[in-house]
Image (cartoon, helix red, strand yellow):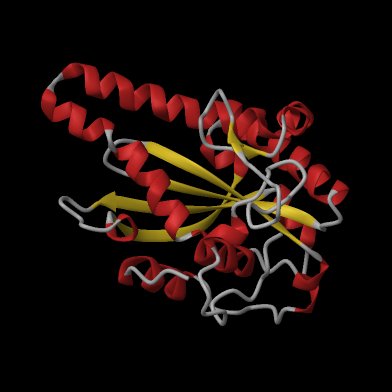
Amino acid sequence: MVKPTIASVKEPLRKELTTCQNCGKSRLEEGVTLSKCSGCKIALYCSKDCQRAGWPVHKTTCKLNQRSQTMAAALAAQSPAAAAQGDVFKALRAFCSKHRPSIAEYGIRALDLPLDPTRSLREVVLIKVKSVPNAKRAEMSFMALSAELVPAEALGRAQGEELRSQLKNFEQQQKRMGQLGGIMVLVFDIDTNMSNACPVGFGKDVLTLKPGQPWKEPLLRTLNSGTVY
């Protein structure tokens, strides 16, 4: 479950936000063991039953992430120099994992969901980043250049239709879990054209948030300062 007011919490939240993508169980819960999707090696599930039940929702994101992995592998096969580029996707995933609480909070702010919760079905948050060579910490391995809201169709007709379908399925999944819906944040590396998809669920408590809160500048500042929660 993603809490909309995250920056005020000082205790690290990454473990709390690491949940089964189908039922929402946190890995902090007793007896919960999360396993990676056999396809993209990213999405986590607490059981094979949850993985099967969550496949209709995860399908599009899985394909997007596998596509990026294929590109990374192709780069790695070209030359030693390209192999270094092939590590970008792995680094991008680690960067997103470290910053997930901030990505979740400001992604929710960006869509002004109190005014229209269904906006999450039509638009996604796109964060463009650039790799930082020789970064010593995962949270500093990319520089965030820009963040914007874009309609799903802006990603291309076929991919846009695929993404809108996935957004609808994700919303339905979140509602089955007692949530109100979900948003999608795409983190895109401009040098390699690789992206990492970050789905974020939200509850009815987002309706109590004040509309029009700043999100772009605080998000970029947080990502580029290496601040993690």
